[in-house]
Length: 221
Ligand SMILES: [Zn+2]
Image (cartoon, rainbow, N blue to C red; front, side, top):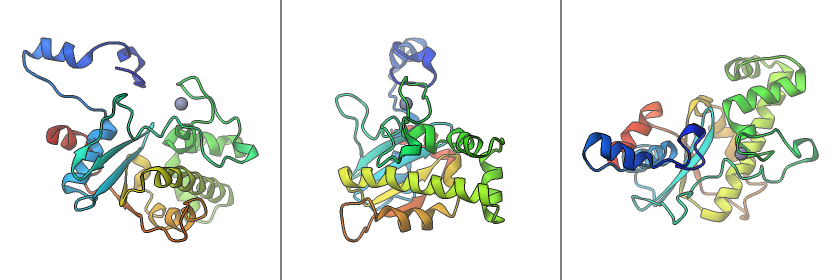
């Protein structure tokens, strides 16, 4: 295991330990990979050639499925965009919040649920849950609206960099923040500024199986 935010697991052969404990073969993939496999197989990404799956939850992860196959490269980090630095960062976003991985300004520190909440607190001095921020945005509250608009811009930039490298047919969002329905209009309206193409045909979709897709994907695996 590596890069696990359950850091106690890092450096240990969890799959081998489970095989010994269970007395049977075990296959493993991280939650974002399993999520993407589920959504690509029979969910929101079904029928698309290249599916990039994104988890926007307590952390930010991603996975890549091409023509039905989960892509796990030689480093087992395919799709891991959460600990890249936020692209096209403006001065106020640099060096960015500290991340558990040891660096600053990772995409995860802005786009996770706690990342949005920390952004609201930095700007207002007040605390609010991401749900309260979204409720405030829907009622037109200025600070909540500003936080939401920053979140949309950051998500659009993060996904634009993914589109520029992978050019997926569809991006499927999961995790708690994926329940913000406004994202599916606002982010594609914004990402064209950073995608290296005059028009962007990539679709942005909400996961069909929500929180169940992780375990569904593990079953498909
Ligand atoms: Zn990080």
